[in-house]
Length: 203
Image 1: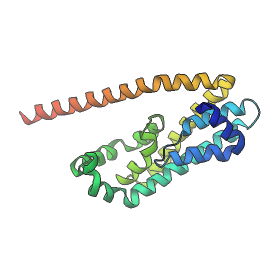
Image 2 (image 1 turned 180 degrees about the vertical axis):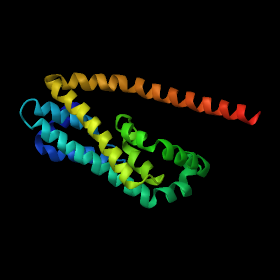
Image 3 (image 1 turned 90 degrees about the vertical axis):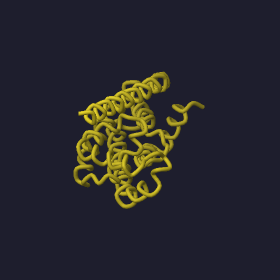
Image 4 (image 1 turned 30 degrees about the horizontal axis):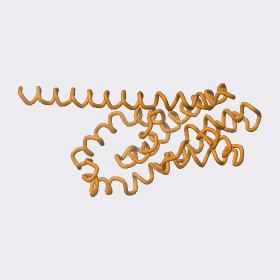
């Protein structure tokens, strides 16, 4: 059975609870297909098995809750854990300090768009908590990002209907290209920063 078929069966059996579980656990770092679960749930709703509003509400609440759990994990112990063991994953205290500075300037924007970035979606809350983003600011922008993300994929899944498997195949087809584009953009940004720093040191 394909991933889409398995998720459709799970949604059919557990309904909103199954969607909420997959979306929620993905929010605090667990490997779960939350995005695909929303599409499957909305596709199932298109045939009357669920309501599209119910899918959207379940996914939104689970997304906000899951990232909030991740935030609390990062806030209560994430910073100390990174400072103590981060060097094993090349996240030295100096690099973490730069990450904190970046989040202090751009944290709200990062939280809002993180839902649409694979990898960052799973660790968004943990990073925000570990870098000390204020709780109220995190919740506000987390909810904003979750609303946009859920709305996008509920609409896509609902309109997909019987074409759910084909759309999932297209998503996986282009996911590698999107990841490569993100890596290239990050490398270009890092090269620009290094060049700028080198120019400043020669003055």
